[in-house]
Structures are given as C-alpha cells and as structure tokens.
Image (cartoon, rainbow, N blue to C red; front, side, top):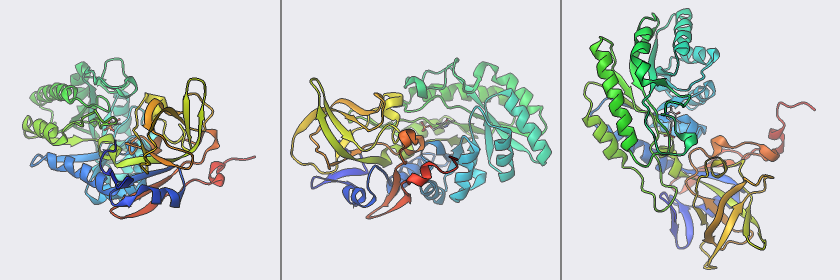
Length: 414
Ligand SMILES: *Cc1c(COP(=O)(O)O)cnc(C)c1O
C-alpha cells in the first residue's frame, strides 16, 4: 500500500504529478526519489503546530542531507540540527542560516567546535563536562560567547529499536538528569558560555508520544529547579524522534496535537524541535529494477538492482519497507525474499513477503525511504551510489547524479 505523496493512478505509481517509471527509465536505477511538496508540507505542519509559542524547527540533517532538500527547507525558514562539521558545511552550501543551527552529538572535535563558533551557529547541545570546557576555551580564544544547552538523559524508555533508542541510563548519550543541576552550576561558572537551554532526545521512530511527554515533563521540572536557582533558562529543545508509518497498519502520531499539547504546558519558554525522519521519511522512495527471479526448494527470490549498500535499514534495524510495483500488472502475488546483488546474506529488503508477482525488467519502489536512506549508503562491493531526484509537482530534476566508476577510486593511489 502506498503512503502519500505516492499513489496509484490508473495502475501506475505516481509521486505528486509525476510517473515514477518515467524517472526510472530516464535516470536508470537504483534511484532515490523525493517529493518537494511533501517535505515542505511536513515541515510546515511542525512550524504551524507551535502557534504563538516562540519556536525554532531545526531539521535533523543526518536524516537526509542532500543540498536541494536542505535548500528547500532553508527557503521555508527552517533551522537545522547538525551532528558534524560536514553537516554544517552542507547547510551553509545550501543557503541555510547559521544563526538557526544547533550542533548536537556526543563527540564534537576541536576543529568542529571552532568551525561552528566562527560560523556563528545558534547553540551547542552538549553531552559531557569536558565538552563544555572545550567549547568555553575555544570561545575564549575566538573572543565570542557560546550559547549551550546540556542534553539531559531522562531515563525514559522510547520503546523503539535498541539501535535508535537513546534515553536510557546505559546509553552513551546525554548527561544523567540527576546530575544536571550540578553540571549547569559548573557551566554557569565558565565565562564564555551562555547556558540558556535544556535539550533532550530519547530516540527515533516513536509512534507513541507518551515517552516524549514523560521526558518533556522531567525536563520541565529540571528547568523549574534551575530557574529557582537563578539560572536564565529560556529554551527547551524537545529533540526529534516522532515516527512515521512503514507498515499499512501503523498510524502516524498527530504532530499538531502533540506539539500543541506541549505548548499548552509551557509559558515563557522558547521551544525547539529537531525532527528528521518525520519530515523526510514518507517523502521519499528508492526505485529499483527487478534483475532476476529464481527459486530454490523452499524459497522464491526476487533479485533487484538495489542492495544493502544503497538502503541499509532492513539489514541494520530489521526495518520494514513496503515494496510497490510501479505498474500494477494483474499478474497476482508471490511470497518472496527481495534481495540485492551484494555478497552478504544480510543483503535483503524483505523476507517471505507477499508482494506483486513482478518479473525481470519490472520496477518496484521501496517506500518510506526518504530518511536514513541515501545518507547511510556506501560503496560496499564497489557499487557506485545511486542518483537522487527531487520531484516538484509535475517537474523533476536530478539533485545528485549517480556515481561513476571514476568516483569509486577518487583519492586512491595504485
Ligand atoms: C537523530 C537525531 C534527531 C532526529 O531524529 P528523528 O528520529 O529523525 O526525528 C534529532 N536530534 C538528535 C540529537 C538526533 O541525534
């Protein structure tokens, strides 16, 4: 079953007003295809949900860092949540406003902190006392003040896949909320830091908002304590993490209601949020061509030209992606494993999946691949990474060309 903005018209899979097969034939496969209008709408839904509450919606660049995707969000006034100097470079190249950039991540290097301070980013979400000390010393040398938040770990179980759960005591992320009062006191004593915010991010792909609300309440209580001690906390960064439906039976959380209820419980605070997946996930698909069909005594295989190097989510997170034929042929269904050409048993997109009975030469779309898709692609097996296409209404363009064989050896010596 397709999710919007993907839909069948007369047995042909469209994204917005564009026939996906026209793109696949023109660019060859595999190819990532994103809908500009879906990305804009999903960003605006967040922006509007805050109503009159002062806020900043910072798109989590790691979910999809294509320059054209960043540019269209920047044009809509989005801020950006980055986790590396490389992501900051991308945001600047795409015309993003550095004063709307927040730098997250547990292992920022000296060079990255310097780059971010020189660029004039909005703030850092800090994850250790040594990081606070490093930022203070670099800010001192550059003669600037650095706005910082401490990312607190509230011990809330996000009830999501263990690899994308981040808010428990034994995770590497954040500072234990029980130690936060002391850490803020020490941060306030560092002369080049402005600790005016608290941040929290407990995990990704949350379909239930209850853990987010629980974390939010713990952070509000911390902010009340810090303010009572005279600290000028003005901002609460909610992190990202809202989930998207990968399976037809999954329901997407209501962003408007969720954000609205959080706004209703705060006053006098600026709220920040860092959504990634929930802005771009459903807006993209990976289109691939069927190379072969083969069967063993027990299994039917559909071999496609995309592989785990192009989309690693099934192999890494046991993730489910709907597999949709670009043309509904009426040839019935088959129960098959959908696999790629890479020499790993983990190279599969689906196992024992009832799906359209596609034949060699047919195209299929792996749905909901706009987030954590291309950004996690590699050249494993010396496979050039796929092209990326941005559709805007009935028009579309290549926003990253397919890598060539020469790209594969760039920088190497024989
Ligand atoms: C990954 C990440 C996000 C985005 O998470 P989504 O689940 O894609 O919304 C936001 N903030 C931080 C700190 C992150 O690490």
